[in-house]
Image (tube, rainbow, N blue to C red; front, side):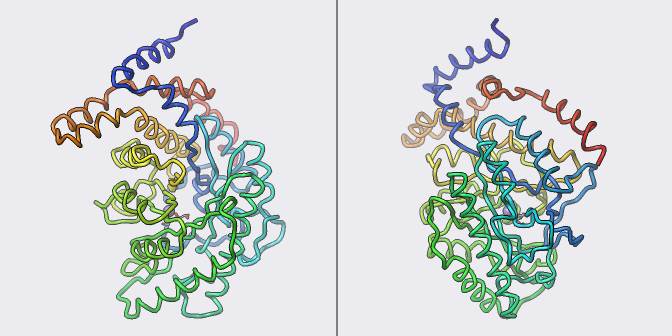
Length: 418
Ligand SMILES: C[C@H](O)[C@H](O)[C@@H](O)C(=O)CO
Ligand SMILES: [Mn+2]
């Protein structure tokens, strides 16, 4: 029986063919582009160290929607709900504070065994894992500094934490057969005027050099470094600024992480991709949505998400750009937040894959900027949604907003009882 989705698909296929766009090839490519979902949306970046400490480091999850995951088993169960509602390949991005252990483990003593359950779970799901040292929400980061701390003992603690994290990341890569991207973000910064900025940056550079001194095969592990403009309580000075890390990633040949919320309000990371790719081999994206500040709102299918996707697809950066998400909204159902944000990222990638880029590029080369603008706008209303629905159907996930029913049922039967 031909369904309305099939009918729409056939019409869409023909419509896109008029622009020389092959929808089957687009879907095939989409199936090679994983989006790394961040575990920390599931519990407001609390983690499972059970110290009862607050979230620090200048980041904040606002809201108190009921039902957040309280342990790894609950988080995995919630993730399974979300994963089942998102089509195509996914990865999971873990922070070090999501370890599992019966006894307290200091951050500089974390080991692969503390993440063995995550690895087994990911293996069953056929997913890769990514990783992050957690340099926040800890007594030794309470004064706002970690790898750039003036106290050598505290600096050493965080260096050891990052070194231990790299070994865990490499373990993920070896066990799961796909390199884990390990992102280093430190909150280090000052609330007010800072006199000796050079000293902090020099210490951060030297500490990072120590962190990455052990050679690890890129088959298993990639280092990434993430810059930031400011955080709460670190408004005036951030040690790891954009320039700091662009220089670091370029000279040390690490990946560079660009977070959509880490720049001035009118600055966009989509425009930074083509620059960064000239100087670094790998880029990690933290796709996010800043509302007035680095607020980490759920990703929308908005102009910037679309522009990010266009940059990846137009420039064929498939193996060099690693797409991660970074938002944490505690004011709505957390599983729905994952589903909305991740589906939007994938919709943006699909729309970019359906773009008649060759034709647009030719118009630009010919200097016909009128036609370029006209076509860019017209193609926005081509029937991409019909292609998306078929993609969802092929992956056995809900094509449209029906997914919300599944989330609601789970909320009623599981989340509301927590
Ligand atoms: C929890 C994340 O690692 C964190 O959000 C970091 O990536 C960041 O963006 C800090 O603002
Ligand atoms: Mn980030």
